Structures are given as structure tokens and as C-alpha cells.
Image 1 (cartoon, rainbow, N blue to C red):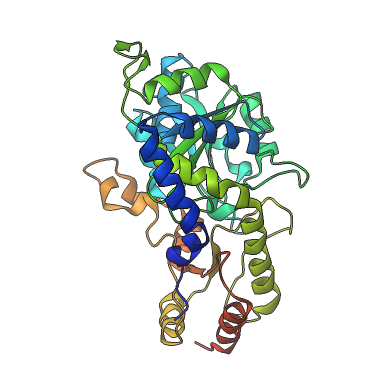
Image 2: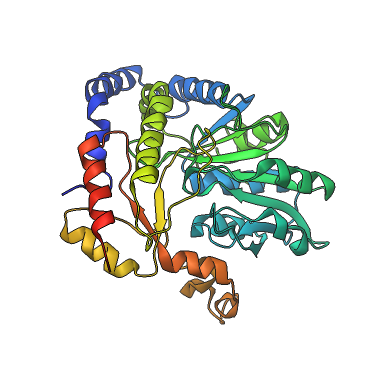
Length: 374
């Protein structure tokens, strides 16, 4: 059996270092917002070529806190509209709703699965105040175009980078943040390219005013203990998880290169006219958190691969607007039509891809895909 993702094997090389860090954190006697969190925030901000990083409880909270931070600063108000891709993972949309903002869905491009910039301006109204960009499956959206649209229409830009750790627009830098004031949300869920051993997240930005506010809001709205400046929450990156992330961060680039190598092998080796391969321009703008193919006979292909010892996943089987949570009794989204989004969700299938996969495993998967006749 080739598992979709073997987290035990992914983390095995760090086992001794993890155990040493655990002893170190235990011995410190400081378990919340200590030196490990400060060190990781500094390290990850530097890695992202950014001024500020604020560790939080998870990627969902990172998004919510960005929006709540902007509300505290008066740059957003409850009820404002936020443009968001229609085919994103549900967490992106739930974060907008959690902040009492209004999601406005926009179709993606078939080729990249990312939001289609050509469709954004038609959805901008007098209530639109922000764009939430999602770098889905590890590939950066068309940020140059999106930021120009945002600038022209005086909109904030928030980036959901939960799947794109280390993706860059410039092959010579780690510059995910070339846009001065954008705020970026990361998740360190265990299966991410940079994964903790539990939940974790971070907000990365060059906006020092926003960073200051979300640093307080994540900790009950307090900058000084027992003095509450904002209506806050409890969402702090755990000291131990930060310690583990500090150990794994130096290996992120090499792990991403391994992912790109597997993706390149898939793209050159899979030759089956019943399978649509993902688009990639062979730059560092894609870190292949997921390698997602499409086929009209997904169930048959998934069953066939399972019978041949290959585990796959579907990211994601139901589009957000068709979820039960958005029934006519709530938002009424179920009656909306987004044909591109719906086709993507009906056809996508994710193949195994991770830094610990062997060449033999990759070649075996390619062989079985090329033999599939449906």
C-alpha cells in the first residue's frame, strides 16, 4: 500500500531532535508565548521576507484574526463584503463569516484552480472592502493582477496561504509578500508542507499596526497582562509546537524541491487522455502541497487505484455553496450556480505526493494510471 500521506515517516527524521526539544521546553518552565514562539515568529518572518509574524492557534484563527484586526483598526466594518474563490476549502469562507463579514464567491480558472482575476471586478460593489486570495493546492494565485485590481478599487488583500508555505514569485527569494500591506494566513496543521505535531498557525505581514493589534487580540485582547485593550480571543501558537516548527523550518525548501521533483515526474510520465493534469509553469510559484488531477470517472479511478494499493484523497468533494450549512434556511447558497467550481469538485482527485516518497512508488503510480482504461 502506498499511503496518501505517511506523517509518521515524514516526522521520523526529527524524532531525536523533537525529544530533546520536549525536554528543553519542559525544563524551561515557560509553556505559553515563550522564547520558542518568539524565535519561530522571527525565523518565519525572515523566511517570508516580511517584517512581522504573529503565531496563533491554527490557520482558521489566523484568517479570522486578520479580519478582526482590520475591524479594530477601522479598515473594515461588520457587514462589509469580501471577495473569495468559490472553490476554496470551506474554512476560508467560514473565517469571513466568523468575522461578521459577507463572502462574495468568484469562479476559479480551470487551469490553476485559483481565483480568476478577470471575474473579480464584476463582483465589486460599494460594499466590497477586501479580497481573500487562496493559494490552492500550493500554487500562488495571480497576485500582480489581483493587487492592481485591489489598489485601483481601494480594497484590502488577505492571502490564505495554508497550502503554499515557501511558494515564491521570484526564484531568488522567499518573497511571498512583495505587496507591502498584504496580510497572509498560514496553517501548520500536521499534513501541511510545514506541519507541526498538532494545530498551529501564523499571520505574516509588513503592516506593523495590524501585527500589533492581532498580537493583542490573540491573547484576550491584552498587550499587558490583565489590561484588555480589545475584544480578544484565546488563540496562541503553542510553545512546544513552535519548538518543533523551528526544527523543521530549515528543511522546508529541500522538502518543497522533492515535491516539485515528484510533480515533474508525474507531469512527464502520466499519459492518459482520460486524465487532466494540473497546470504548472515549472517556476517556484508552486510547492505542490497537493497534486490534483481531474477525471470524469473519479469514483472508478479511485477504486481502481485502491485495488492496486494506491491511496488517494478528494480535495474537495462538495463545493462550499452546496454545503448543507448554506441551505435555503440560512444563506440560500445551495441554489446558486458556479459551473466551473462544481465541475472541479466533481472531478478532482489528489495523488500521493510527499518528500518521503520513493522513485519506485512514483513510477508505480504512473504505470497504474497509464494502464487505466475506465
